[in-house]
Length: 297
Image (cartoon, rainbow, N blue to C red; front, side, top):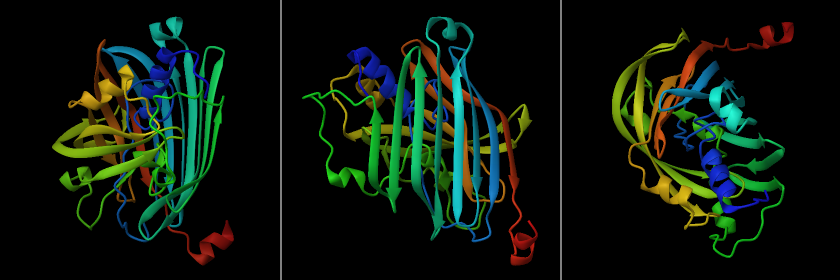
């Protein structure tokens, strides 16, 4: 990923950190989180969501996200882009995908891909993972060396999740997953260039309602960003995100699973409050395939 100047690098970093909130498209905000715990073995579900990004109440982007979780595997795909007045000033679009296996109650990503197009510039990231360890990294264009960047070590690539898989929160137990425990823990994320931690903190339970689909309770978590390696500490975007104490994510359930996904995200910015909120959040349980039903398909 070759950055022509530090300003573009800062914008790219804010964009990459926002992958799960914007569904890895091209819009606003920061983050990645996951609290993967043992779900029931039969849990299967699908989410089909549409989102609108706003800055100070003005629409600036749209995105779509589809997630499907089966007994032994999962897949997620997202697209998005700028809209409204922002598209006139700085058009952009992106797409991301992640897939992997479900084992021992955990999501193990195997592959992550992200492409962000801004004007005539295209940034691509490809990750190959196995059991939480990054095995392959491809970044195009190649990043320029920077002596101020905190170097990545081999240990920084172990015990991590990709940004998209890290968007899904798995909650333990048999009780309603929309509860305070969903906001417990710290998550390790690797986005291809940077390793960072996301800490969640319970704030409250609120009722949400999409124009189409889900209406009901959502758990609201505070989100705290902490860079570990691969970043340039002096960059404005990094300093701003580290200092933030008012970033929040609303998590709503995917039917048939103990998995929660972002319904709404809010992040203060120098230009006003940035939000990403679902206008459509349709989820459904998927029937468990028996040997007989699988054979008939």
